[in-house]
Amino acid sequence: MAVNCVDGPLFAMSLMYPVAACVASAKAGAGWLSILLILPGLAVGIGMAFLGRTIVYATTGPLMAYLDRQAGWTRTLLDSLLAIPILMMYLVFPYAVSIAGILATGIACHWLICHIV
Image (cartoon, rainbow, N blue to C red; front, top):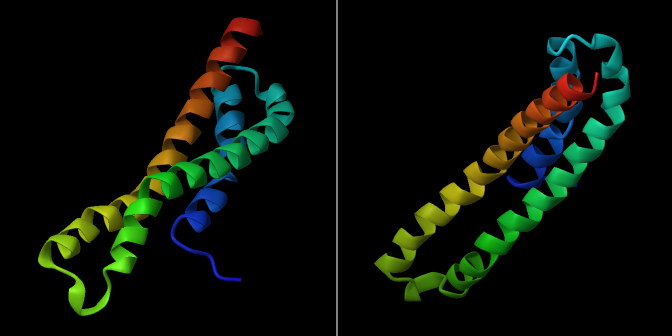
């Protein structure tokens, strides 16, 4: 099964969400609570992977479909220049979504543990 540039990073980085939750609980002084945060962290990671996939394909899908229709000799210089930012967004956006989600998970777990425990 082929994995493209969007699905691969999003689902591979979903394994880092439980790690961020555990590290945040250890830094908050409740390391014993980190075992309870593994499954919710994994659920948030998988949810963010699906959400990020939906966002990336919703933003780049119509533009990539337009460029796909313009293939061959009918492609102009403007179409080629339009493809460069779309490709960069397609390659960078999954990592940006994953890193932002991991940081938000760590901050939320730290805040939750500091205010509840």
